[in-house]
Length: 335
Image (cartoon, rainbow, N blue to C red; front, top):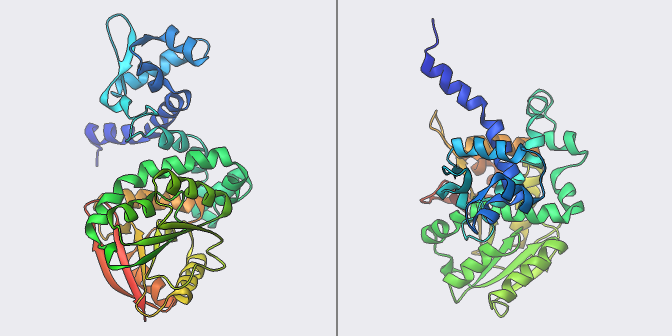
């Protein structure tokens, strides 16, 4: 049986993915798009503005032009394309932080995927000597990049989530592990009768408090500095876990869900927002994200796996709501 040239070319393109990731990372880390936002520039002008030496940047830019990320005119001046615009720092849909994170710690961890598959260990821990969240806590500047990167990935999910589920049925919502508060802020802005509490570790909680202050939500949003492995604020109508459970293996995830279960009052709900792995061979970002989660110690799950996990915490999956993007909202009630 012979492999067709088309298949060989397709496989070759797949194997170039790592090269593309690193070239994009270099441009994003240096801030090339921010310079080009002021107008087209030659390689020498870019190098002067960005403090690089030699012709390396020119060669990276030439390669990225071939992929449509940037473009070059007849006078050898580089300029932004619609793709390149997304790497500007000052646009609402910026992907710069995502590119900076994907090409740095995450990229360096991917070469440990084989070891993770063989031994079950976290590739990130093998590479950096500590688990992911410990590393981030000790490197706050990188945690800032990570926060922005996660907003790049998950930010577009917020509106579809709010359109698919009526948070206005609750008077109080606790956003467990809610980062710097953008999700809870969006809920409060859309549903003016809801009050919210965001729980996060102290250094992250301070950023969330600033978010609520900047958006004028301090009368309805408060921050609880704490560890969801120990407890969560009690007595709320809903406990939101958005892209929290997938960060952990079942044992740790169960601790979080058990603490939510203990904090619930009659009629409360736990709301798990995650990408759910579907059956079959259908392409899906979540199947690749699951490999990334393997590297940092977490996992994506099927609907049946989420159902069983919730049952182990004394919860019953009452609704599984799909949204217009690749994320679902799982509503659970006390069993």
